[in-house]
Amino acid sequence: MISERLLRIQEVAGETGLTPRSIRYYEERGLLRPAARSEGAYRLYDASDLEQLRFIKGLRDDAGLSIADIGEIVEDEESRRRARAALEVTDDPAERRRILLERLASIEGLHERLNAKLARLQAMFDDVEVRKRRLHDLLAASDQELAASIEPGSDR
Amino acid sequence: MISERLLRIQEVAGETGLTPRSIRYYEERGLLRPAARSEGAYRLYDASDLEQLRFIKGLRDDAGLSIADIGEIVEDEESRRRARAALEVTDDPAERRRILLERLASIEGLHERLNAKLARLQAMFDDVEVRKRRLHDLLAASDQELAASIEPGSDR
DNA sequence: CATAACCTTCACGTAAACGGTAAGGTCTGA
DNA sequence: TCAGACCTTACCGTTTACGTGAAGGTTATG
Image (cartoon, rainbow over all chains, first blue to last red; front, top):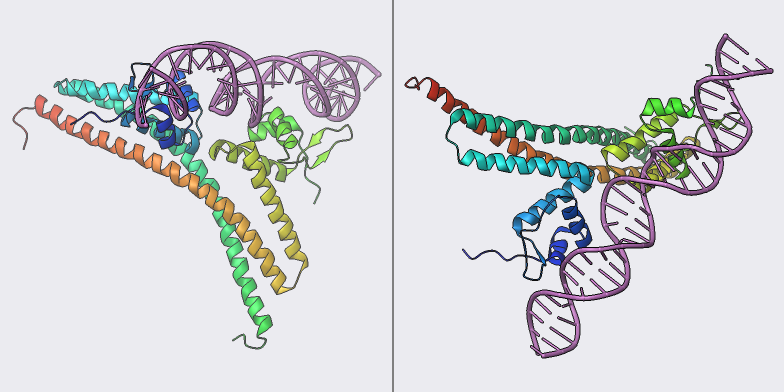
């Protein structure tokens, strides 16, 4: 398996829909580090970096979180990754259980956070949907009325 | 029916969880106008203003929209309100239908917009949920292992 | 009617999240 | 080997969404 091709920042920008400037900014804020640097210090990104950047973009655009908030989430992700690595090297069932519990608590935090946002957005959405349905009904009634006015006496 | 009590800006802030500054800022950006002004030019808000501000806050915090975007949505809301008033005064079925279709198209725009956001957020949420479930399963397996190590020979 | 607790309109300040540009180094294909 | 496209750091600029006074007017209460 030949090592995968690493991308330069502009290619990554194209792939993710971010700008090079944003990507550098996220690095500056500790949200990710490029997988490598070239001889001449060019940033080089691998597939997991792309995934990470898409995750960041999702939290930014879809969940509407601040870069600082995303930073915390990313830190949690990293600590879970470390915990996962720690799992690999221990056979002590009690220790494994402790690590798993910690990872679970951490991911449940993220889960609840997104859930709260989702619930509120869903409530707004439902609200709009109700109004949309009401309009639909009004329109249907209006159409009946219109039909009656065109074909008078044919109602029933 | 005695006219309802109007609130001053600080009371409104308390009710909505916004700051007076934000409320004035939203007014400056055309997102709402207070129902009235007192003799001495104090801003006075009624119940529908409160509702409006809560709607704005929802779009800001839950949907994560910019004030400019919210401004557009609010304009649409207002044009729908005008359309609704126009409905009241016409009996021409064709005209009623035209107005209703316009309102429907407008609200469908908002509906789809929120729907897109909701879908993407939902996708992120589902992703996290899957990871959470996997951890749960791992934990359950770990617990079995732990039980087996404490009570050896009692497995089955 | 005084006074504390509001409010008003400027107007300047600020944090976040980048945009843009300068000065210079790096890569790659002909 | 060299031109053009790309990259680096550094730094200043900008927009958004307010925060924070200042200077002065308004309202409710004793």
